[in-house]
Image 1 (cartoon, rainbow, N blue to C red):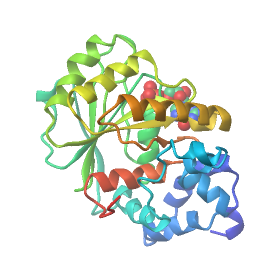
Image 2: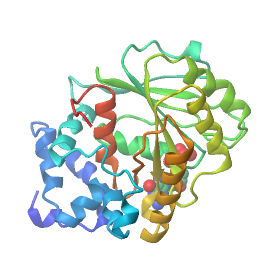
Image 3: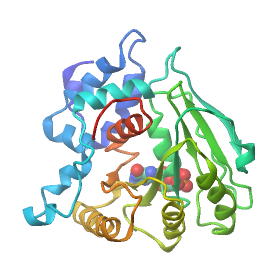
Amino acid sequence: MAVSGLRLGAEKLFEMPAVLGRLSRCQSTSQAFAEVLRLPKQQLRKLLYPLQEVERYLAADRRQDLHLRIFNPSPEDIARAESVFKATEHNRIDYVSSAIRIDHAPDLPRPEVCFIGRSNVGKSSLIKALFSLAPEVEVRISKTPGHTKKMNFFKVGKHFTVVDMPGYGYRAPEDFADMVETYLKERSNLRRTFLLVDSVIGIQKTDNIAIEMCEEFALPYVIVLTKIDKSSKGHLLKQVLEIQKFVNTKTQGCFPQLFAVSAVTFSGIHLLRCFIANVTGNLDLTN
Ligand code: GDP
């Protein structure tokens, strides 16, 4: 790839995984990520650490309220995590099955992470972005009103399982409580729950149902702000400060650091991959 081809506008960055996917098979993931590392410094920072990028718009004393560097991997650590998400002959990334009840869930012994959030929060787009190094994986979604929503299980090689939980909002809390509550309570290999919040609209009443469940079952969970490309820097900072305050004062099990992603510009996707690889025991980062 010519270096000039790397000087892409931020809006083009999301195309990078597709571009990288076309690179010849013999090129390793770290080589492919090396191309990302050659982006101009500011673009790279925005892509890898989107919240640190907006942090500099805050006065120094307000920055202390934020915990943006608890998980602070180097670009090299992020590059190592990419190989976990890269589909190869020896690292098969596949849809496994769907379930409407926990006793129908596949018996997968690996560590598991799940994604929950309101309908339309951008959950399937985020999972697709996380799986962009395995473009053949079909992120199945049933959005037809009246259709039963399911938990969808995806196997990431021998590393871990990703579970796409039904979106709440429509027919919630009944559906959500029945299916999701039992899953959250009983799934013994669940390592982390990722609770998605739309960065444009912030935490909504229905999000509290999921937050209360995580708190009640003492689950470790993480708030991920979605669609950050749609928020102005000012609006994003306002939301981040509000949600950070909520996390600091009202939660026990929530990871203090917020994550922020865009499935369109790809901002924050690599960092989130790295975090997932780490919490599932596939990297040995201490923080
Ligand atoms: P789900 O119902 O939570 O699975 O949400 P989807 O992933 O289907 O997304 C809902 C809508 O938001 C769709 O129109 C997506 O194209 C849009 N969307 C999802 N993620 C992003 C994002 O990061 N940025 C923008 N601008 N739109 C997004």
